[in-house]
Amino acid sequence: MSQNERIAHSKITRKFKSEGRQLLFSQGRGGEVQDANGMTYIDFVMGYGPVIIGHADDLFNEIVRGHLDNGVMMPGYTTFHQEYLERLLGNRPGDRGAFFKTASEAVTAAFRLAAMQTGRLGIVRSGYVGWHDAQIANSLKWHEPLHSPLRERLKYTDAMRGIGESEPAVNWVDLRLETLSELLERHRDRLGCFVFDAYLASFTTPEVLRRAVAMCREAGMLTVFDETKTGGRISPLGYDHDNAIGSDLVVIGKALANGAPLSILVGNAELLAHAERARLSGTFSKEMIAVYAALATRDILEKPVGESPDGWAEIGRIGTQVASVLSAAATEAGVGSLVGARPVLGGGMFELVYHDDGLLGDKDRREALLGALTGAGILLLEGHPSFVSLAHRDIDWSDLHDRARQAFEQWSTSTGAGRG
Image (cartoon, rainbow, N blue to C red; front, side, top):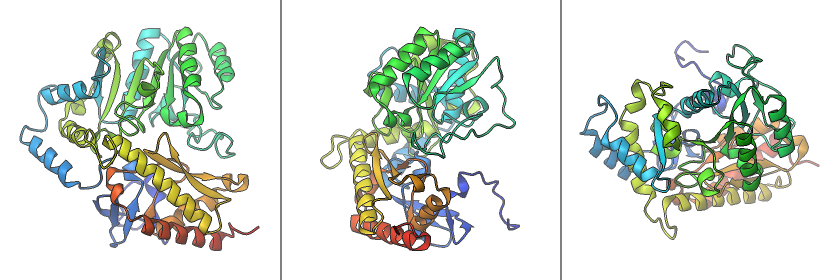
């Protein structure tokens, strides 16, 4: 590390490199970002999902600036918080919302409410549900396909609290109801909470998830649907609401405020009445800039866009088209039998897919593909869903296709991926 590097990088921030060096970004506009060296990239990372309108959007910035004259922090919650919840939860009249900065905080709050209600500290989890100890300890590579050999190796086994014998955190890995039943029976007297990452809904069906929630309820557990990636992105409230899954608590985050830090824990009034006793709050839970940003995001997404009835539908259309263009580019480059792309949960997200089992388990070749795409000026995520924004409706589709084809060809040449 050079002496002028001050950032304590995590694994996440080290994903994006050029010629072996960490990229530092200096500016974003619409669906693109620029690094410190002046290179421009089509951005499908979108801050890992929070940016949903686009970078530095003029209308978004104008609305937020108009709110700033009201102040940044009041003694308590404000009429702006109340207005936002009314707009968010209009179709759920019996529900309340608790404000947080990050979804990891909101999931931790859900765990505490579950423990208070059930008297049990154990957790059944499926998917990536945050970085706090019990959320991630002894976890998997949840974004890998169910049959990926990279999926099942346990990670984060050191220095984690809250996962002992009396408070287990157990993984529902294969999404089979028989397996869930076995977990519930094995740990029945210790499990108080079931938490499910909505992204994994793309690996199963609504009926399976409705039955899973019912099984956990019958076992006396509180059920939580973590819509951090999906709520406010695939639709205003997300997968649980749209498919009547019926979870007790829903976590919504990331895309709510176009990049400003905001997450909301949603549940019925009786359950959320425990928030004060559970001390579910912090100094910045009532901060107002993120709520201004959330109101601005809502103002924009509620309106029709082109032929789409609202911004959420348009974002789904965009993500579906991005996946189609990437798959076509891979085919044209001669590697379509190995890799392509697919829209996830309607297209608000998309992901690379590997058609070859050898490639699926080859971390080096997969990371080389990510590097080739970065080199061609396309930033997306590998081993994780990527994201689109409303600004990507203005994308030059021919340019995206050409860049992607160039990246696939370079990758095939450098790794021998297309041979055989």
